[in-house]
Amino acid sequence: MESGRRILVACLGDSITAGSPGWDPDPSVRAAIRNPQPESQYEYWAERVDPRLELRNCGIYGQRTDEIAQRLDVCAEGAQALVVQGGINDIAQGRPVEHAAANLREMVRRGRELGLRVAIANVLPWNNGYPRADAPIRRLNALISELDVPLLPFYETLEDPERPGRLREGWTSDGDHPSVDGYRRLGELAFSLPGTR
Image (cartoon, rainbow, N blue to C red; front, side, top):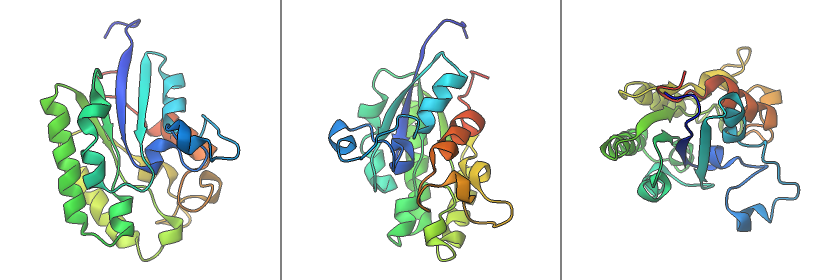
């Protein structure tokens, strides 16, 4: 990889990709955020770790994996790489994790079909859904880990070792999403694009 070459990365997902609650890539949604913070997204921090990267934020709050999949081609246009993230909204809506895993698998397949380098993030712990959502999250993450694609360990990066299955308090802003410091950790520690490190 030439050191000066820019790499456009399409980041496709739900509110975790969007940067909720402090950021949203859609200006109309962002207008409703009292104090928008671009630092409230993992993409912001990953670009600072590797200045070659330009990360396109295609996150939409509340979307399930089937809804995210419908946006893949538009998000990926002109990109060299794709990061797929999603699944918590499927769990929140009581949908089978096997269906979510199948949707994620299809996004990986489609990304490769488009000639992109593909990575996938696993599902974060969910404090406000604990303990009900803990087993489905772990099951979905086990299925994600079986996909033949580099894994971004979002779950392990923000899980509280003293309270397994939950985000560490300082790394979440609302029990649902990372805080700015949580997003910083995801961008600096968990984000790794295939072929760049």
